[in-house]
Image (cartoon, rainbow over all chains, first blue to last red; front, side):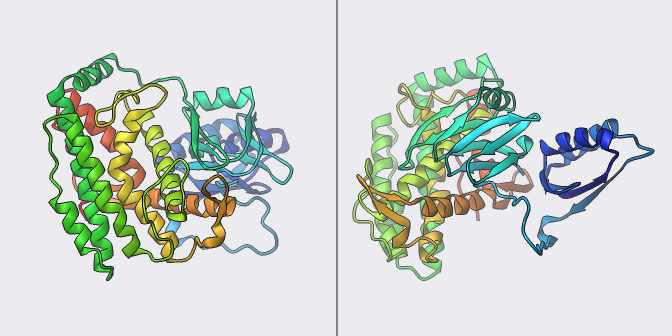
Length: 86
Length: 324
């Protein structure tokens, strides 16, 4: 499944979340990650994120999109292109 | 779905924050470690020890190719799927002429079927390849001993490759030649085959099979010959189809090649080939027995599972034969 994860987290904890998400998804912009993951990875990520944040003060939103309906338009420059050919 | 990471430039790969980072003069990029299943290096890539440890733990194979696109070797992680029984049975199956001949001729049968299917596809599109299809159909697979099987395999390729001239007119293939490839089509075939070899190798890594004990090819030193066996079944379906698409749609043209000691793809041409090849591997089809959609890459691993079932006397091996 294709997911977009956006978050708003206190600076004390934000780095932990950023570092963790980096191992699964591509960092697109500040506080935005996106990429293709499996269902089991989705479970792992959600459980892990719950332990990293303070659920009363921080917020994370996960969007799930079927890849065939994904329509991506970029205005301006692309900060971090998602390519697997370097 | 996990993807392979292809590195076409020169740079350093190191570990940062429990994931990989690739850096050179132009780019500085973080690579999500859980999103990749293998790394192919075509440029000069330095791996730092932290990165090596991480790759070993995550069971990711690193394949390296030289500047001509020839396969040089792999950084093969420690074997975690370890099964003594399977390896002993695999070696015994190799040593038993009946068993070995059965598996070898089944591989050649699968190859023959897939060659026919590929040519039929282009025959439907109006290419004049009927005579080659007939030649392939008529070629018997003798299975008295391994040399006979190998010679029928060779003959099948001899019937198959001339059909390339009918399917595409851009790059004629006079004769299949390698080390070094002498014309454009030979270069494409050689490069495609070495890509398929590495893909097969990383899929075999995820099964209990030992990659050096093979059935059709003779197991030798310094190569993973089981990967050659299994790759043969998929060459017509994956490599040939990719080549025809690239050449017939003009994605690869005369400019994509350079003359060195032989004819080789340029960096840009290679990049296009890899992109198209990966798209092919990602394509999914409905599997009749598993009753779900599987990718071409997963089909390769299924071959491994079927071989294990055969050598453990669970289910007789039937090689992959394109059913669509």
